[in-house]
Image (cartoon, rainbow, N blue to C red; front, side):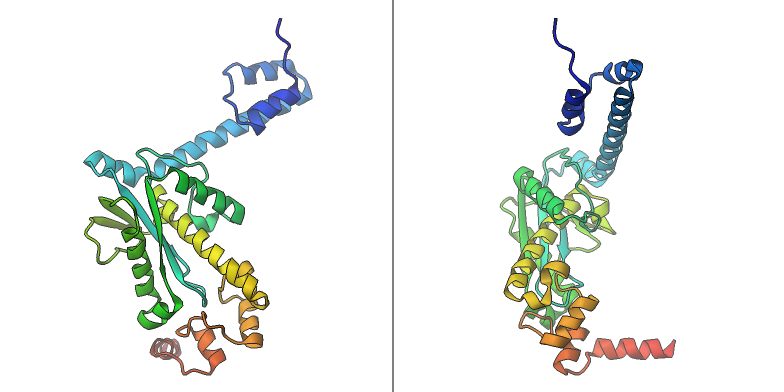
Length: 277
């Protein structure tokens, strides 16, 4: 007669290891009556509820892809960029073509994923599983020359053109990628509504973060590994103390002030508009 597994073994198998739960297990634990068994049954039911909710979320995030797959588009690239807000470094875009029906637990709007290690794990899973993926960059010099909006579009185009397999449709976060032949759709808050766009976003975010972490090692006094160049109070204080680095964006107001440069026309317009209100 087989030995009955202990509660510790059951907890390890079905909670830590995530094995499929037999249909009769929860009722057996509840009938056991011991406090430990009841606690395990409650934990398993909570895990099952979480799995159902995650499955529903992932199905919802494939609604755009499912419509396009049904129309015959099979190579759908999700595209997004990261790095518009920081006053240092490049803007980076990511593009990913996911397999038909692909779901990745935890993949979501990258801004909702707070742990850097979790973002890296998701990015590695996307790279492993995607039909094709790529990133595209626009440098701080390009940002200063053509403005951050246009630089973001340029990075997106480079990401799409860098894909090893040519997509037949693009899903893009809130914009349209210029200069590419594919039909496309811009989706407002797309990284929270499309799994393909979320995949592109996580590639963009992690790629840029790694780059800024390397710059942080070279310039520890700026703390790039903590805020990635955003104009946080800490970064503004570092700018005041140490000055601007070559890769700071000269078109951004905090950097211009530190360098003693005149305000841009956009800044002057914003100030005038605020005074008029």
